Amino acid sequence: MPEARNDGAAPAVVTVEDVNWDDPSKDRFSFRRLLQFMGPGILMSIAYVDPGNLESDLQVGAQAGYVLLWLLLLSTFMGLIVQMQAAKLGVVTGQHLAQHCRQQYPFVPRIALWLMAEIAIIGSDVQEVIGSAIALALLSGGRLPLWAGVLLTAADSFALLFIERLGIRVLEGFFAGMVGVMVVAFGVMYSRAEVPLDQVARGFTVPHLPRKDLPVAVALMGSLIMPHNIYLHSALVQTRRLGSDRPAAKREALTYFGIESALSLVVAVVINLFITAVFAAGFSGADLPDIGLQNAGKYLGATYGELVVYIWALGLLAAGQSSTMTGTYTGQFVMGGYLDLKVSPWARVALTRAVAIAPTLAVALLCGSGDGAGSNKLDQLNQGLNLLQSIQLPFALVPVLTFTSSPTIMGEFANSSFTSCICWMIAGLVVLINGLAVYQVAYEAVVADPWVTGTVLTVLCVAYLAMVMYLAMGPQSQLSRWLHRVGCTRGWCETGEGLNVGTEAEPFLSPEERAEFGEGVGVIKADCGCCGACKCWEAGMGDRSPSKGEAEGKKDVAVKAEAVEQQKDGERGVNVLPPVSCCCGSRPLQRVRCDERAAVRAAAVDRN
Image 1 (cartoon, rainbow, N blue to C red):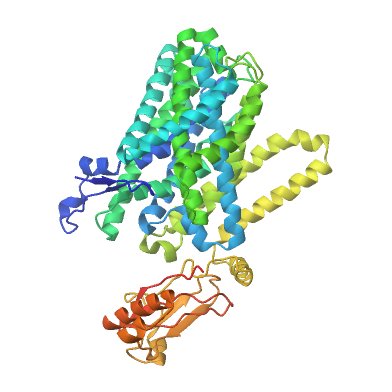
Image 2 (image 1 turned 180 degrees about the horizontal axis):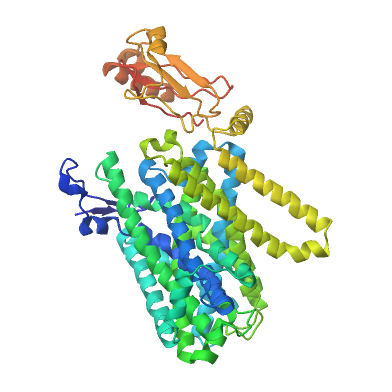
């Protein structure tokens, strides 16, 4: 049986049983094997049914009816492609997206990427607080003010952290239960709405985009694929420890992760369909431009009865609360990956919620009750955050596509030309959608003040596109190498990050290069982990390890410990190489050990 563990410092891991890879029967689909991989896709799918998505769903239904259901299906399918790229990166390399960004990009770009990821996470957390606070206000019959719901939501997020302590399987079961609550609650609403099935079928099968529905279409596409979810999925797949490191084991894992992700997103499509159809049946053509989460309860109560209001609130609360833990998880991975900083879940929740509550609480105090009687300021904030998530998306999407298309990083699992073409088309479409969204929001402001506002927006757009183009060029571009060199001279980067060394199977040295150093000499040829632009060469030219007496005679504790380790290496027949210095002027890499066959056995980084 799979073994689960949780060491407290890292997410729990479920060990997947190994199989006999020489047995032809292993290629057959196994439901039992699928269950072992089930879980990460459930947590990933939460982002497709969070309060921000529900806001877009109800606005699409109320303003466009059933016309854009095909776009919902297409956007979710594109989301599946993107999520599988994230899963592939995690399964094949054993590292998640934030770790790769830290290793591959120079100091300034990776700090910018980290800040963008944190902004996206905080924006998502604000949406979760908004949805949960509105749900609590509705469940209390309007007696609980929105500001109190905001504070209560901030407090109950800590209670959810206790679930993580029970193990990864319990946590995944909790999320599955929350998704089940949403399916039942919104399904009951759907059954009471008398939705015309023929129009639903036409909406899914006949692509049509009226010009008047372009704003809600852009909002729908922008709300589904979330930037923080890419980071999350690339890390969650590592909670399944494969029984083997063979390529066949990784292919099997990707197959089952793909099936699980597809099934989870099918459920997400069903939930989004329920919301869109209910509001389309009740409010399409009613000219309700201000409809949103905050006043949806009022409209539902007037159309379908008070019971539906409580059902809606229950589903909305499940959406908000289930998003809380995924946001916390993502924050841990992002901060740990980019900064190599381990922060406890408690501290992470406290920090994120403190930042998220401030603007939400300020708006809630101005909005009145949560039954729709007040203004729609929270809805406007929620819509603005959907736009923010859409704008942030390329800063997660482009790096993951760059890495999964790189044979250096992915080896034989690198994207094919066809897959790369599809993925980059999706990335291009995302940038285009962002441009349309910004145009819609900024048009009136630019018309009112074309010089100041227009100039500022132009500068921001140019900077945005320049950053996206830089990321698309990849971390090995000439610009990246120049930034690496600048970082090295200023001490910004940790020498050795991403150290790329040869192996016995794939040595960097050609036969001619190896002959230059002589046979039996331990040789490495490594990319500089700091600048990536030059090669560091070093050879063990007769270096001998210290004797036991020499090692024990060292007075300095640190020097003695290193000498003892070198002496033990010498007893094992391992040559000891001197520190490697890079021609870019970076600090020396720590000692690298090679054996007699010139195969690199280990590489470490001097972080001092």
